[in-house]
Length: 625
Ligand SMILES: *[C@@H]1O[C@H](CO)[C@@H](O)[C@H](O)[C@H]1NC(C)=O
Ligand SMILES: *[C@@H]1O[C@H](CO)[C@@H](O)[C@H](O)[C@H]1NC(C)=O
Image (cartoon, rainbow, N blue to C red):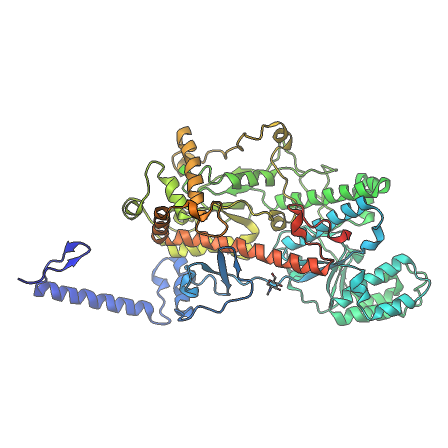
């Protein structure tokens, strides 16, 4: 009797000759088709959907399947994720096809942050502890605002000026006004750093990220020594050689004994020869004394009565303007996206709380005031004019909306979607429905129905990590706490809690307000019972997903082997969803590393006070010691 073959537990029917020829035809058709699809240069994309054309297909040929994992780069690991920065990050939907490691994500190459220097002589306010604290808060606001706009803010002190060989020459001059001497120190410190950007600590960027002037400054290449009419001595940019030339001329000036600042040591026609003067700098706000006296009288008065509380008021005013300007970029409000909306109300709750904080009116000593560079702004008013928050199921690519996304691990999404089922491997394979439900639902408005998960994933990655996307959205992980450096991401101190007065009276055990329900056309709304079940399921999923890595909320021992097996099965079934999650995790991790590295480097440089020790409002005491 002929042998009975078994495939996948079923007997394979014996093949007659007709079957065999059919099989051969099928195999040859498959061979020809796959040959066509892998020939270099073939335009596969032309025949399939448009978005597929954009990246995926064309790239298959550029990013040949590597036989070795790409080289490791410096500082490419944090916690449980690692990454590989490459210009072709959008050419493959799945990073592991490049890195050969499913935990190593391909991310865009980071822009180099140009240093922006600010000279601050901490010895001048030594005696007044309160004043030094308030000045330090102001410097923190300055650093945060420039960091968020893609710069590397660096505070220079007398130490950098003293490093300049010209310093000895300067101290030999006699009869110089102390103010002029201080201004000279500023220039010497700048020259010592090799030129670039020199700003006053009262100059703040107040424009969207892609503003042309900010983009110009970010490029960090300055052919000529330049200043702006609007800003006076608030901002200079230029190459070292020209900075040196200016200092030499100023030091040789006959007016050294009478001049009060660097610019007046030079006669106006020398000034013209040295400086290129640009007209307007509408993207920058300069809170110089004359502006304070005309526009912010209340703050100016406070500064004359008590410097410390006056500086505090000024800092609060500036922070409120930064926040207000940020709000004005998004007139259509904030979208807290909620894909798979039936069971994700608790899941998006932290993102919703953040949105509430962002839409609050900032505390300010002068509620109806506008930033100095924006004559007409819409003042914030908590009663009538709060930014709108919506919870749509799908991501909208609109420049007038800020998006906060919460990316769940597919295990979390699966356990929430099926509140009454115990999920096991069999269920994952047979009953869990379509693959990658989260990414598919999120990108419904971006991609036509029927587009596969690969191109969708690329659109998602673009929304998370491209320059445009990152300026218009923030993506969080559902299983982790909010990052603690959000202030640095936004560039201003995000208000602590929504409705602080209410929060003070409220007993601590009251849970935060849940997001409002989604539009019924996006899916059925949960009942009260479903909502309470959701909370328990979410906590369980967070423990199981978090357990796979060093930073999870629960320790490894809490997860049973069985849970881990199911989690791995869900990951294998939802490759795009898990890729989206890992990508988001890597983007967040790299941001943290970038900021921490800079913070450490700078704290060494500025006297050794690490700012991380101070928690949320960190860094204020660095210049006190
Ligand atoms: C959003 O729209 C802009 C231009 O309108 C486009 O360049 C960008 O690729 C879009 N982003 C996504 C994620 O689709
Ligand atoms: C990597 O991190 C270390 C310290 O964390 C830092 O000293 C070093 O400069 C960083 N390297 C790069 C290339 O950023």
